[in-house]
Length: 309
Image: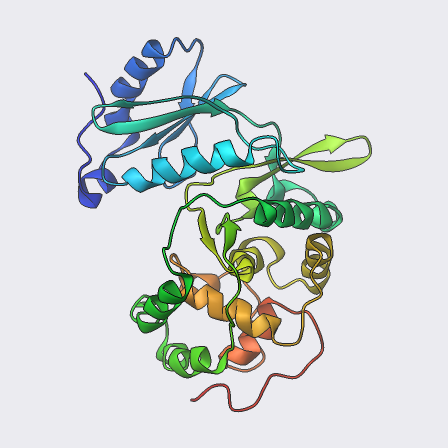
């Protein structure tokens, strides 16, 4: 037997780890992998540890672009960032599923590192993101960044179905008030989370040892990257965010928080309601105040007239 049918999102979401087990074992034999093959607990796609040195990632037929994106980007970044990324060893197809065999990076997720060490490592992460943005970006799409922004803005409210109305009704006027400009698109990771950055002990402290999960990569405005950074890495910490931006080489202006929140609302996977569960609450229920709470870069007061209630 091979891998099961997953031609639709419903079929893929209905699969259990057991449904994939037989096919994964067969694929491991085909690839000549020895030792234990065990699935990681997290991740939107099935990813397996193959011993201590290899990782096998599967892409169902319903998401063909995910494989194309990640396999291309991993080859572009290989050896070109100041932090290690997985090296592609083999690719192929089984029963319509694409797979990627890559090297396994050492370390633990950044979120498991002591808080003080995370802040100390922040400039190195910022430096890595700056290097990523400096690389020649493969043609990943969107074909037009301005078109992407326009389309996402038009659906920004409907893509937040679980959001309380006190926040949802502010979104259109807030987005209208934020000047995003016309930045040149760069290669973006788009979902840098503490879970996607690895670190290892290094003497008396820690050092970054890996950045992975380039499946959602795209071309876009550099500041789009900091939407996920603020939510999943710095989490409202002024010191953490400042250290990361220093490493990136960015001196943010007073409108930086508003642009970051705007890009969060435009993000393909935005879920504002879920972020309220683990991030600091703003002093006032306005999107402008929220922006300065989650991306605190200065003591500048929120702009007036940016939101409606």
